View 1 (tube, rainbow, N blue to C red):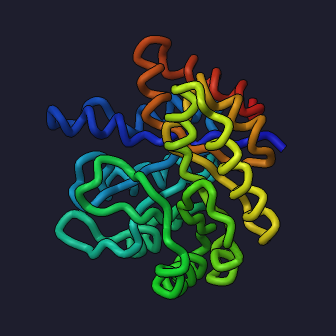
View 2: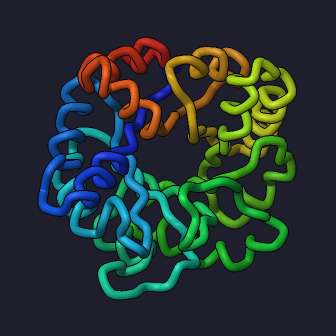
Length: 250
């Protein structure tokens, strides 16, 4: 089964917000990605509204509905505040096909670690149940090397997303074997527990093929920063098509 490509359009919103106004438009970028064959669109609205905002999510929900998967990422523990309704209420209002829970703090530049399931499981359990109630598939952001994933299954998760930042760093440094082995071990543990496996963070054209060869049966990769960086030079349509060729999802 080919690995699905979900394009994270946050970076388009970062550029828009740096200037104000409506350009570049994440909706238009998402339309281009979908036309090129992307299997899904990912967004990660944060409480400080520094990139994708709740208003964007509603627009993208309308665009994706019946066409491709919408995946909303975020910290389920972050409280609502003006301009940010909270992850669970936003998911309840938009009913994305997938909701990926990520333990990022408000001030983080980007996500950089997975859940501590031993600590967080009971807090996550009712939130996962609420998402499942509105039809969301639920994925948990997990560090590579984690093996005790029966907990994730027992609290209702459907999938995990392997945090691939350390793999990407090791790949760039030419010392990839241990990091790739950690990813593969976590994928096997998840699959043995009956969970699907997604992956994301710093995956790029230079490392994606090696990752997918070393970590079999990955259902979905979420890619944003590298894809839009590469698209500056090669164009968005062409870049999406190159990723689809790497994942086999063409």
